[in-house]
Amino acid sequence: MGPRHPNAGRVVNTIPLSLLDEAWGEVVDELEFQDTTVPPGTDLGGLSLDAARTCYAYLICQLRINFVAGVLLGTPELFLWAIRPHNLVGALSRRVTQKEAEAFVALFTYSSDRSAIASPLLEHDDQLLIPQELVSPIAVERTLLRAATANPAASGNLGNVLGDRATRWERRLSSIPGCEVITEVPIRDRQRRKAGDLDVVALDRRSKRMLIVEAKWPVDAATLAESYKVDATFDKGKGQIRRIRSRLESGEILVDWPPGWHSPTRQTTVDWWVASAQQLDSRPDAGGDDITTTSLRLVESLLPADDLDALIDRVTNFPLPHEGRDFRMHSRRVDVGTRVLTYDSIEILADLPLPREGRLINTGWT
Picture 1: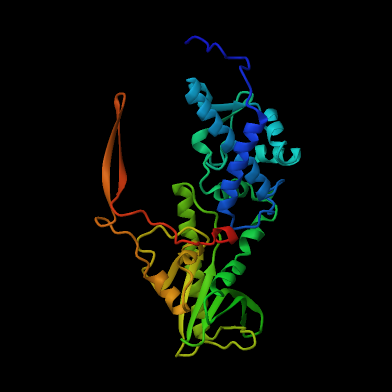
Picture 2: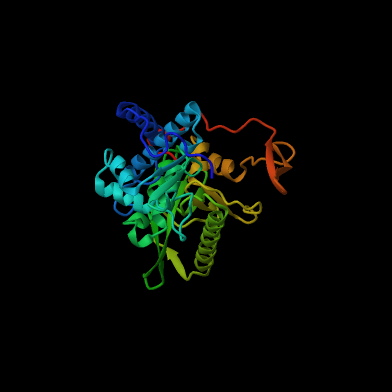
């Protein structure tokens, strides 16, 4: 066992609260700029999404300060933050209520049925260890929602909020000139009983083009296993569309169009999409049939569009990267003592794609 650090067990100095508050404020602004796909007031189970984001900003802020201090003072012990739970609650209570602080610590403490990426507070003896590598300022909403959905019984009305997705599609598609949009269009059987609905329907009467979107709202994946679940959501949506189309063609069910709307005719081109919030189907053959998979985030990056035809063409013919032209794969090797690790890496050959200028993330766009 090596010698104890001369400062171990005693407080050498404290960070001025003014400095901590200034750094925390900068992180809050950074996270708020990302915006969220669900309302900030959404209950995650004892605290709102906004309060959880505030607490998470404190973790990021403190870890950044710890890292800088560790480098400047030459004390790598600072790189791994350890804090007693009641002290963390006390620190968070300066920014949210104590009840919300306690709920945050409970929600983000790791257990065997949770992902460490979404629950980065690791219990060790009487302390919480908080590794910097697990607390990322990227895709924070995904992290917060993943933590909340780990316990659906305690996540308040999050499920209902995630399900209320059609309004966002309505606002985006309504920005296209000449595009009329309706949501939650009932489908009824021959006895007028409800047999489902169409989430989003967009119509361009001039070009006789109709778009029907089965909107899914899974929480974005942070691990490979979670990505498989999102892919399964796309499969589920495609299955729903196939069943609906089959029953419509047989006359078993009918769409209960509102006044002024009519069933598509032979002159109407109908496109069917299954769409998530931000994540695309990860499989190369995802576009292998006549049902397109996409995401609201991709659609937003392709707007504005002159008409519905233009948007549909951009989505269905999106220029995905090609190996050999845009990237290439390399096999890497790392020697770790007596062991050898090999892994594949991606080398980008072209310029990195960037969101278009003026993308409206500050007004609710994903």
